[in-house]
Amino acid sequence: MPSALPTLARDIRTIPNLLTLARIALILVAAGLYFYVSPGAGIVVAVVAGVTDYLDGAIARATGKVTRLGEILDQFSDLCFESLAFLVAISSGFVPPIVLMAYLFREFWVLAIRRFMAAHHLNIPSSFAGKLKTNFIMWGFLPTFLSVSGYLPGLQPWLAHLGRLGLGAGLVASYVSAWRYTRAFVAGYNSAG
Image (cartoon, rainbow, N blue to C red; front, top):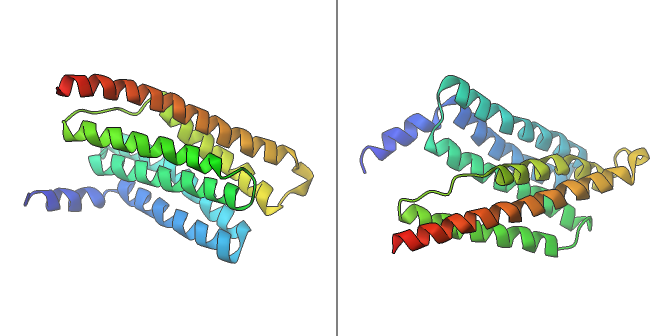
């Protein structure tokens, strides 16, 4: 275990991982701004956070700085961003609370089966549907926020439709990916004996 700290210390200082950590901080700032200060400022900060999601991965691949820590931080920040999008949508009445329950049910299930697989030194790799889930929810975030904030009233109801479409498509893609992850889990469970 003594070598774990130097590896973590080295990995956390890479530019891609620092960007991911900055994204997590920006998501927290965006939530605080949106709910307590200014929805417009919250939207701007959240959009900046969303853009960094594409930068950190591109930089990691271009510089050969892909790390296990980066994968963990990236998944964590995606979940934080997606949760913020659903919290805003639900707290404003944009979508019913059952949507958050459906989202969390899927996330808890995938977390549980990935934990089992990791404990048995097995892996469930991310799927294309899982990546679609994240992208639909993140891109659905902008029209959702603009709609519930009342900005650009001339674009209503189209902003609302676009936001609900993005969140809904993300939720559907999340269950498609969960089904595939579940199939991998069943195979892993059976092979683990």
